[in-house]
Amino acid sequence: MFYGHPTLTTQYALTSFRDTLTAADARWDELRRIPYSTPGRWVISLDISTITTPTTKARLAIDTALTQIFPVTPFLAELSLHPTNILSRRALKSLKESCGMRLRSIKGLGIRDVDPFLSATAREDPVTDLLTCTPNLEVLHVVGQGFADIDDEQPDQQTTTTGTPPVLSLSLEHLHELSLIATPISQVFITLLDTPLPALRSLTLTSYHSEAVDEQILAAQALGLPVPDGGPGLIGGFPGPQPTFPIPATNNGTNDPSTPSFTSLFLKTHGQGLHKLTLVSAPDWPPMPFTPPRDLLITSPHLFHLFLIMEKNTGSLGSPQLHLDAPPKPHPLRTISLTRPNEALLSSLEVALRTTVTPPKQPMATTAANQNGLTLAQALRATGPSTIYLRGGSRLASPIANTRQTSLFPSLSTVKFTSVRWLKLTSRGALNAGTSGGMRQWKSVLRRYGVRVLDMDNAEA
Image (cartoon, rainbow, N blue to C red; front, side, top):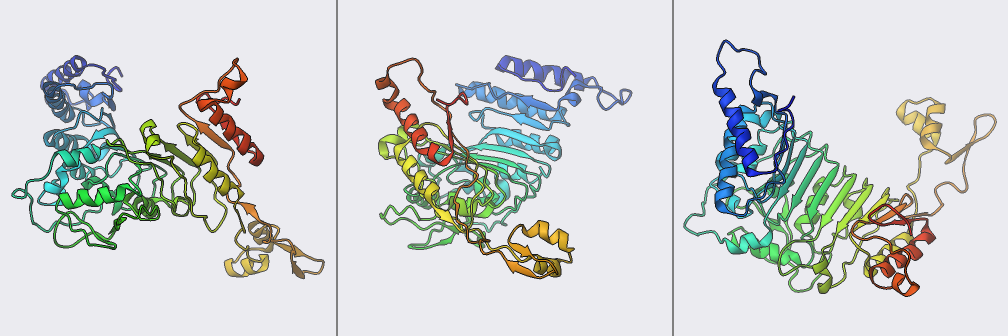
């Protein structure tokens, strides 16, 4: 079991590990027929997420080592990489052919967003091609390069192909955790947008929304993608048949936060079953204002945990606003996590907490029993106290049933700041200044609604 779950922290350790596995595998012959007779067949997980590559030579050495390791580790199920170690086509092909069917988790998979649009077909994107052979994948973390990668590497018109590719729909029925960081436009993003993900419960996205929509359209135009003017159109990355999802319209300089974006489209497609959603501000420079989609609660009706990661450099461009359209029924949101307090966000949240909605009308117990073939006792348990039954079997609708107003967030109990702590043993002026003062303002407002405010140590003031 020494080789079962190795965690390698240096390039030398990785190459030594490669040498050991390949040497042992070379000595294997038909007389040694035990499936686990070589060390590589014991490897279940491989973690090299702490190995960084500052030079091209080091990246090449790591890529070569991984290309040689994958064929001798056929039972590899979990792979953790560092996003700067972007795997080459040969490494991804080796991983696909050797371990693809058994892979359950891939973390830190770095991609270059511009590469997929230079392919003759969608299958030539190496990452997308890998995902076509991972039907048992449960966890996928992808890290792109943001708009900077697209701006720095413009495609050559002579190498851009004009073929008509098939629209891929992957088989990822077991994928329950997905992370797409800094991927404004990529073949992986586009393919996942058009792929059913019935088991998806946790999603992390870089929020390219509102003001960033124009940048996405410009990036698509720079890559030669068809973008209609003034309204929703279609995007596929190539001429010919297009995928079934619309490309967002441009803002046309209006700075309208309701303008749809790739973020809102992804949530609209895959948000129905989400329990946890993390929206990360874009890492691009110059920084972009952080604006979550305003239909967030509608597209994710079963969300329990909302995590908004706002970088410090977004504050100089304007305070993030949480513009949320009210859902038609009470939302089950329980926890909101933020990196640091924000006054504008507090005002928006207070308005949302004051908003009340009417719960949907429940059916009468006898109606539910007749329609679903239930006994009267089963129907009573299903419908609750919306019906009052009198002696003799007659029924009356409760005069207070379905008329009581409830909060938009009846289950919200916690707001947590993940990057700051409460100040202790200091003067009152220091407690009410800066970040500490902002946290205390949050506590003063939210305690009226029974919401706890915690710091990064899960402590209250």
